[in-house]
Image 1 (tube, rainbow, N blue to C red):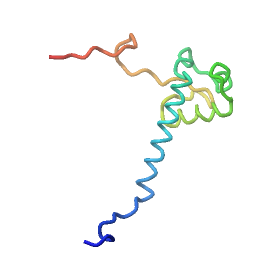
Image 2 (image 1 turned 60 degrees about the vertical axis):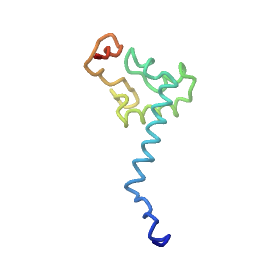
Image 3 (image 1 turned 120 degrees about the vertical axis):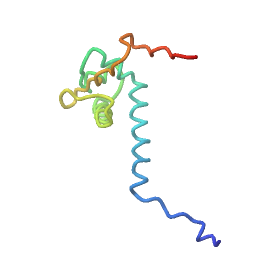
Image 4 (image 1 turned 30 degrees about the vertical axis):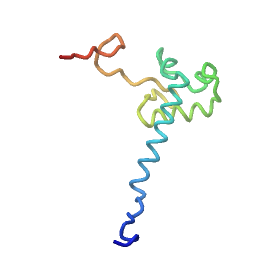
Length: 103
């Protein structure tokens, strides 16, 4: 087998794009967690301007982050620029994970 026969074809744009967006999605979620966005939205929708001060961030940049969170479904936008956490999934109301059942 020649070296040319062993080479695999380059990845197609269709296979690379999901890899790129997966990285961007993970970074958006990481930054939101680091800034404590979920905790700040517990009392309801707040604008990027309202969240900028408690997070110590640049309001226009934070608005872009919030839009990214809305695009990937981490938050819902009740109106443009005002995210709120999505409805909680059904489960224990305590906010703690259900105990694992074991043998």
